[in-house]
Image 1 (cartoon, one colour):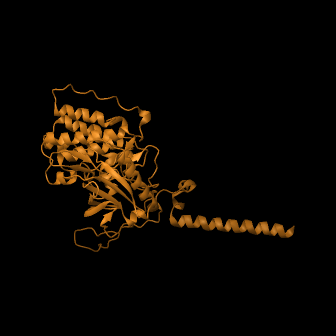
Image 2 (cartoon, one colour; image 1 turned 180 degrees about the vertical axis):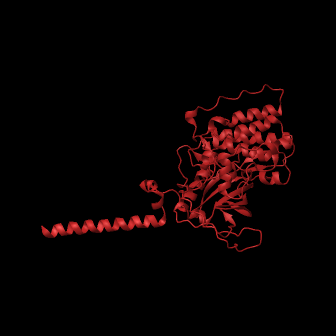
Image 3 (tube, helix red, strand yellow; image 1 turned 45 degrees about the vertical axis):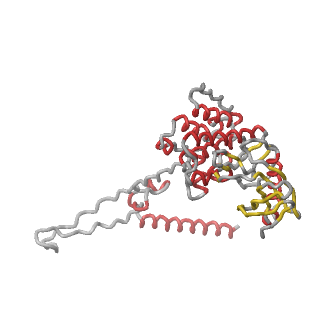
Length: 390
């Protein structure tokens, strides 16, 4: 897609990046202010669902008014191509801030987390679930002000835009119920916030893996390891908040981000009364069933030694005066007597096991089989003869 130079009353100044939609720095020629303009690409235009989601993002974000949520000034179409005009933010993404060590000390990090939590609690109050909380979608300026930027896959109640069998969201931050494709509640964002809080405090992801399968297995079955936080001497109360946010079951997870922010505020100012945690969510509202434990490999069944059929001992050969061959003074090596038994094949089935020992050998069984064939042939001959006489 060729980058435009003008969209409506907006002059394009710089391409900033993007995927299904491109983001540009632009200038509003009428008001004279710098803005960020998001434009749907050709590939996005060719996908009806992507186009519908883009328009939903425009409507969703334009109805927001919060100091920690990006402001939307305008949206529309230019030659049939949808665009969104937003506040232009100075600073860097939270991802870059973490990577570059710009997040500051513990207090600054906790204050950033509180701002993110308040922004998410605000959208939850408007019946919207973000579903894609990650550092790339959060801007941090030089003063530490945090702004939630992207609502690309935010979902309002009653809106169905996700393809069947296709899970939206960045794998590292997805809640267990989101991995399983279950109906989502705002607690999916609470889980993502807990993962984000861990990464903000420790500068590493709590979930690692080089494949989606491994990441999803950790999300579903492995509790978050808080040791990296404790190794940095993070207050135990903050570690506990991370654990509370990332419970596998909804009943074990913080019920709202307001409750989480209240605890973070108390950690920042312990002189305040410690907030009481809300009661656990009723089990009936749990959107995800009890997680099954990962299958434990079962040991292979031990192979038992086959039963042997006793064979009568053979009589010892008659002694002769001939000296056996071999070294003087040493007995001659003798070959193990070959047996004609069927013991190497294991126990015989059914009535065969009750036959005399002499008939349980290979030769005996062949003799029995031959006799049975002769008897059957004789009976057949008699039957045919009688039929001829009749």
